[in-house]
Length: 249
Image (cartoon, rainbow, N blue to C red; front, side, top):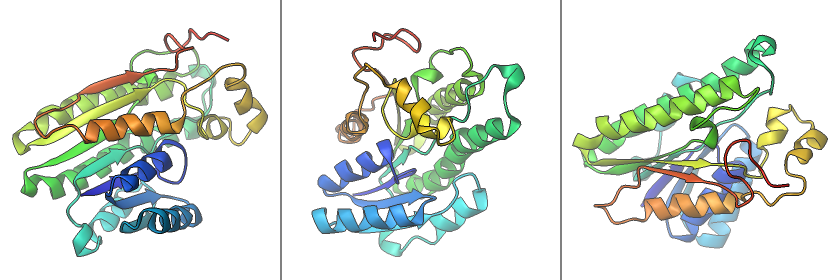
C-alpha cells in the first residue's frame, strides 16, 4: 500500500507519515523544506524499513504539483491513500485590517493546493477503481470566530469540497473523508503569527490541546476501515474545548 501525505515536514503531516510507515505503508512525503523532508525520509527508512519518496515542491503551484505527480517512479505511480494535510493560517485580524498577502497565501494553500493534489492523484486512482482521499479540515470549517474570517472561509471551502468530492468520485469507488481538528499544538500558531513564538505559546497556555499524534491516529483509523466502510466526516476536539471559542483554561 502507498500513502501520499502533503505537508509532511512537521506537525500532523509528520505524525501521519510515521504512523502509516509503522503500519507498513510505502510513502510519498511532500513539503517545501527539503532538509526536513530528507530527515524524515531517513528516519522512516531506518526505523520502519519501508520505501519512501520525498517530493519538495510548493503545493500552491499547479505546474509543480503536476510535475511531481507525473514524475513519480513507476512503483509509486499507484497511490492508495492521499492525505491532503498541507494548510496554514496567516494573520489574525478583522476583515477591514486583513493583509491581502495573508489572504492569498491561505486561499492558494488551503483551497487551491488541495484541489491541485486531489485532481492529479484522483486521476491516478480512477483507473484502479479504488483509493482514499482524506482531507484535513478544521473546526474553523464548521463555524467561524472573530478575526478568523478568511482562514475560516478556506476551511469551509474544504468542508464543501470534501462533500463534493465524495459525490463525484463515488462512481469510481474512491472513498473521501475529512478530519476536522480543534486546537492542536503544532507550528500552526507560529506560522499564523509569522514566527512570534511567545505569542504562539500563549495560545496553548494552561490547557491540554490535542497532539499531532492524536490526529494521525484518527487519520490512520479512517484509512484502515474495511473497503465497504467510508468515514465521511469527523470533528475531533480536546476535552477542554467545546467549540471554536469556548475553552476551559
